[in-house]
Amino acid sequence: MKGNKGPRLFAHERKKDLEDASSAVQTPVVPNARIQKNGFVADIVISNHESAPKIFHYVIQHKGSTEIVHWGQELSFQRALESIEQYLAQFSKGAKQA
Image (cartoon, rainbow, N blue to C red; front, side, top):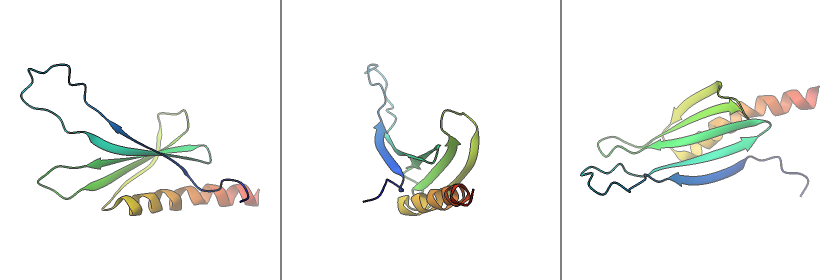
């Protein structure tokens, strides 16, 4: 296998600190994923409100920057990954032509 041309996927879940056991309402865990490729970082966060369908929000940033260069929403995790790949592909092609 020549090089690693695909995205690096770092999946993890954020857990709410439950030290305050007196709280009657607990916030559910929000699953998310992080992808790193070509100097960019993309995060996918899933909104999982019970009264609405799941929406997969994604944000793309330059690695180490807080500036958002692209963002969007999809109805599936797979489609969010494809949208991120499609956006980042323009930078792979530009680097090959230079």
